Length: 169
Image 1 (cartoon, rainbow, N blue to C red):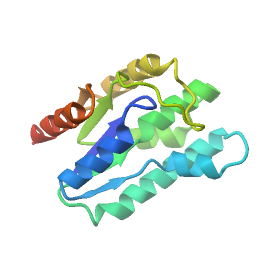
Image 2: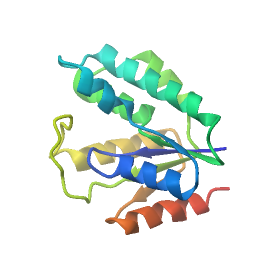
Image 3: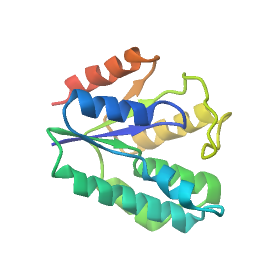
Image 4: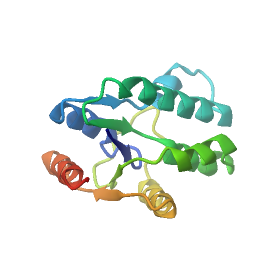
């Protein structure tokens, strides 16, 4: 089973690519739980909320693993939670840091912010996407992750993903 995480700034097609890749490879994908959680939250999120989101995300992945066919695609993972915590609260809970090191993926597809911004009530960083992209890339390098930067629009983006997945051993 190959575990593949899609990571990148907001509005860079992570969810779309996760769905398309799961369909193409006839397998499952783990949706970004943060969107569901935050949509139901009627107050400003806290550091504890981010930890709860990250734990639920990992639980969803664990549950879907048994239904996966050779690959499982994960829309968002612990690096995003780490950066989110540090960026908003200037601290990263130990639970996220320690689990990040033991929950490495076989491949990370790092989506570049070359797509137009689409306004959404849950999105927060329209002018910081390249900054966040660079931060995510530094985090990937710091754990010696196997990653590929995904650029382009529409089908081109999907083809870059499939090419990177095809090179997995």
